[in-house]
Amino acid sequence: MPEELYNSHDYCLLVDEYEALKLENEELIADKIDLCKALEADYAISNRELLILQVEISRLNAELARLTAELAETREQFEVTDDLLNQATVTIGAVIACCTYNSNEDAKIGIYGISPDAFTRIDQFITNYNRAVSAGKVSVDVKTSTDNNKGE
Image 1 (cartoon, rainbow, N blue to C red):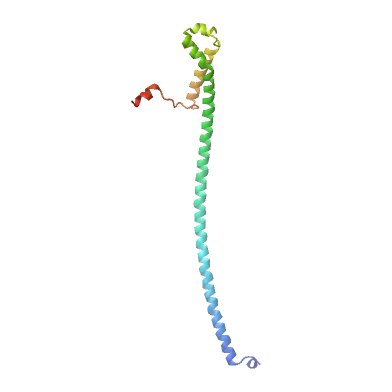
Image 2 (tube, rainbow, N blue to C red):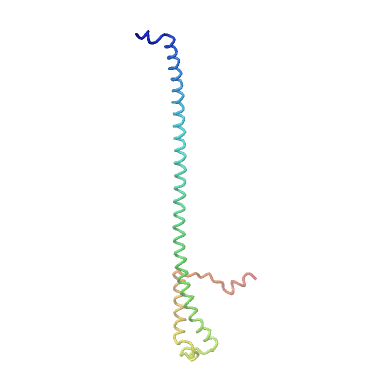
């Protein structure tokens, strides 16, 4: 019966087609292997790039934390400095009045319109300022007259 279904010519055609398909299949398998190798290489490169970016993100987060802490410290210094400046503003009139009228005793009892507690506020200001400077909570970056003359 098989002889009736296939003659030798049909069989040869099928064998040729089979061999061609077998070659095509081998080429496809080789292409598949090459693609898999390329994907593995791309995956390795992507992982390295991801690790590099993660390290950079960690570095930037550390820098952000450092800058945030520095900002908090600067804000605290500003608040202390601002408070001291307000104290100085309140008491500056008393200092000027004492120098102008040249009578500390009269000024202390309020004769010249100076609050009797002005001298206490001046002392408190100096104490608070020195305490803040010692604690590092206020900037002392102030030029003195000798600093200004150094450039001459």
